[in-house]
Image (cartoon, rainbow, N blue to C red; front, top):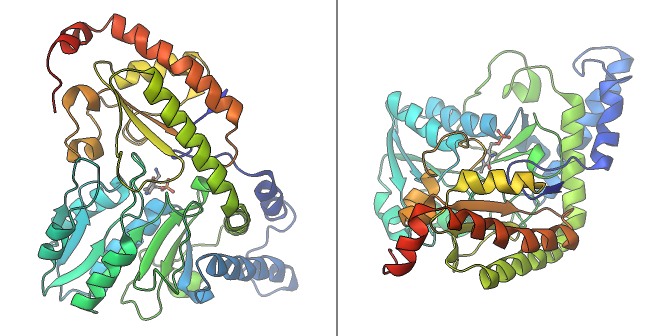
Length: 395
Ligand code: PMP
C-alpha cells in the first residue's frame, strides 16, 4: 500500500509509540493525586510541556495547553476569546478554513458575533486588501490558518499578525497551524511573535490521534472552553491524557530533528508534480504559483470525477484524497476550490496527494507510473472529455 494522504493523518512514529507505552500500562496514575506514584506522570507532563514550548521557538511552558485535538484547540480559541471579551463582537476569518474554524465561526455568528469571511484569489492566496479593509474598531479576533489542508497554500500569518497588532493591539490573532507545524519553522518568539493563539494536532506530525495543543500567549484575554477541575492551570479541565501528551511532545522533538528531511520531501513532491504534469494533458496544480507546503500536491484533472479517481487509485493500492477527508462522502465540491473559483470541470476532478518524511521515492515512482493510465481510462468513458477537448478551455 502506498500512503499519500498525510494531510488527513500520518503514520505514528515508532519512537512515539515507545514514549507513550509506560503511561498506558504501569504508569497509569492520575497526575493530580498526592502519592509518590503520581509524581512520574506529573513530571512527564511537565517535561512534555517544556519540550513543546521549546519546539515553538522557546515560548514559556505555561503558554502551552494540551487539548484533545486541533478541533478542540480551535473551538477553545474562538469561543474562549468571545466569552472573555463580550464588549467586542467582530471576528475576521477566511473562506477557506478547515471546518473546525469555519463551522465554529458560523456558530459564533449564531451566538451574536459578526463574522467577516475573507476570500482568496485563483491561486488560493488571501485577499490582503480585503482583509485590511475588514478590520474595524470593534474587531475582537482574527483567525487565519497558516497552511491550507487541501491545497497546501501558505498564508503569511507573520505579516498578517503584525498588521493586526499595528492596527490595534487589542485585537487577538489566532492561527490554525495544524498542517504547517513540523513542516515549516514556527518561531513564536521571533518571526511569529505577534501570534497570540496557535492550534495544532498530534496526528498530523506522526503522533497519535486524540491529542492537540493550543499555544496561548501570556496576557491573552481568554476563558476556559472546558470547565471543571484545575488541570492545565484551570484553563482546560479533565484528567490529562498523559500517554498522548508525552507522545505529542516526542512527535515535536522528532519533527524538530527531522526538519532537514523536509527538503527531501519537497524534492519528491516536486518530482511527482513535474512528472505528472508532463505525462497528463489538461492537468493543473491547484494553488500553482502560490507559496505552498512542501508535501502537498492538489491536482485538477479536467473532465473526470474526483471520487472515481480515488476508487481507481485505491484499487491500485494508492491512498489519496479528494477535497478534505472531513468532507469526503459528499459530492459537494470542496469549499476551498470553490472559493478559488476553480472551473467546474477541474474542481470536480481534483485529487490531493500529500507526502510525509516517510514517503519513499519508490512510492512516488509508482504513482507516476499508475496515475496517468487511470486518468486516461476515466477520460475515455467521460461524456465531457471529447466535447471539452474540442471546445475552447473554460476559465
Ligand atoms: N485544522 C486543519 C487545517 C486540519 O487539516 C485538521 C485535520 N484535518 C484540523 C484542523 C482538525 O484536526 P483534528 O483532527 O486534530 O481535530
